[in-house]
Image 1 (tube, rainbow, N blue to C red):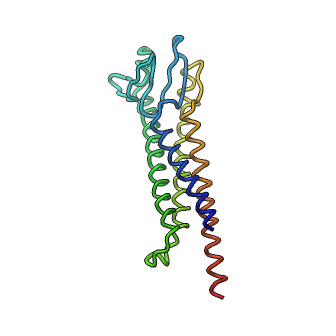
Image 2 (image 1 turned 90 degrees about the vertical axis):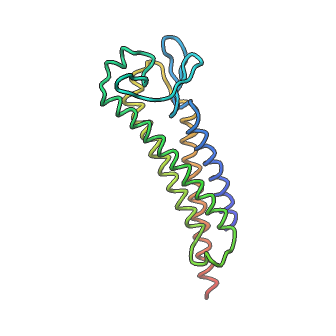
Image 3 (image 1 turned 120 degrees about the horizontal axis):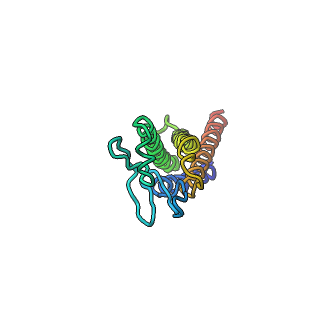
Amino acid sequence: MYSFMGGGLFCAIIGNILIVVSTATDYWMQYRLSGSYAHQGLWRYCMANKCYMQTASIGAPKLFPWSHKMASEITGAVLWFVQAYWNATRAFMILSGMACFAGIMAGILSFTNFSAFERFSRSFAAGILFFISTLFVLLAMAIYTGVTLSFLGKRFGDWRFSWSYILGWVAMLMTFFAGIFYMCAHRMYKSRRVVGSR
């Protein structure tokens, strides 16, 4: 049982670190624009060794600084949509990190034996929190992937997903495995209690 919890805790800590790094870094997408290299994350885009905040304003669109002509041709609804997708991706990544951190706390508490928590299975709670974290990362990655492939990817000829994006997917796997490990630990604990009560 403790080996499952230890493995789950290891996966969860690695997953939480990857969520934070993925969310905070600016390498979700790389592309070439006018012969120069550019990249963007959830918060900033970088061109010619300068980074700018990822914002959109209908009056003065900074969302597409590489082509003010193209930006002026894009309608306000599309700008709102792209900003909403960035905000949704950011929100789900932040919620995922928070759920994973709460799961880590519950997972650490599951190693202790407080009598106040006799009816409350901390390993089960940790597993559920890790699955919630997995769901939030999955939603964030699905939103970013879908909008990038259907909208942003068409704006660039030479583009690709980058390492921050890949870390997000790896974080999803790590939190999923952490949930599996903690659910296995919970099942083992329940089966030992049933055998011990006979």
